[in-house]
Image (cartoon, rainbow, N blue to C red):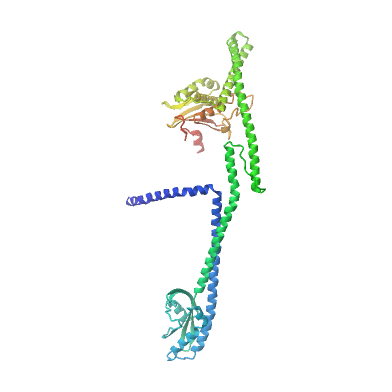
Length: 541
């Protein structure tokens, strides 16, 4: 617990930091998502930086290695010459206690400090004998070589089987920190081994290497910037027409059908602009033609529906009179009267649906919403369709809440939607039960109608709401209405701001779900009932 309490400020600080980072980085992330040119230029800069950095680093390191190798070769040759000269001079002294030997060592290092070493400025030559500490000499300039000649190097040079040894050391000489290439070699004499050390400064090599690195860095930076500028210009040449095409397409989609792109030149981008303009012109012609056809079709449907009302009323009056007197006719005429009455009912139903579709197409459909209990509406629909259900051997099962379900809806339209859904389920239920389920979550009301009949094929769950669409396209069908019921139902649902959806599987039946907001004008987020039946979901899982 104490550890957890101690970590709380850290977690709180981290959440605040993450929130600030997210807020301040939002413009950059938004620009990255929206700008193709920014992404291309950024990726070009990153790739070119990686490539130039890798290649430049390789060139700089390789140049430094070459400079160091050249310095080593020169120092090794000079060291061999100095060892030969020292060997010839020191063979004159048979004993280490010779009083002239210390002076001879000083003269020797001065002789070994030739013009080349003087030219290098701070080259150092040292002679020492491990077995005779008094026999030591350092060439001018006289400096402390303790930082350059390490004990490990002394042991490697003066020990049994000692030989030439090399190392690179950094020391402060004359108040300046300098890197040295140190060579050590034994010089066999008659009085014992003498060690000769040749220390060459690498100042000029380091300066040359730094100059190469600076040049490579400046050249690489200039090259990366140049590549970024080139990538930006090239991308701009390509992206600008695309942006113009996108803006023109947005205007076209907004209804400004006369918008066109400007065609410049004869290149691929000009060809794209010309093709886009041709497409826009074709679309404009097609849209205008289809709008005109749609307008004529809506007007024709509306006019025909209204014009047929008057003769239908007259025919209906005559048919009702004949139907009421059918018992006085012979059986053939009586049957004809019954058929005439049934077909007139279908014809009147078709006209009613066509008039309703015309209102939706013209935008004249209005919602007469009021606070309504949906439970009695569902019960009333089931009661009116009980006779049809009994004739086809279908059982209607109601799963309704015990308490009222109040919603702000148009009761006439909701009842029409439920009547269409339940009627279709009964006709296609194949003598199997049809379940009507209702549920609410306070924000939405959902009503599902489930049958266990022939079901729907994949893709037909979207086609069922098309006008005049039928699963059985045959004109000799025995069931079904005008083919406009579900189209009108989905328009009624949209008028409420709700959803009407379908699910089905071949041989497993279908389920339709009507979802309505409890308060008119509210936006639906979720439905209280699933679209796929729970028994089907359990089988899949």
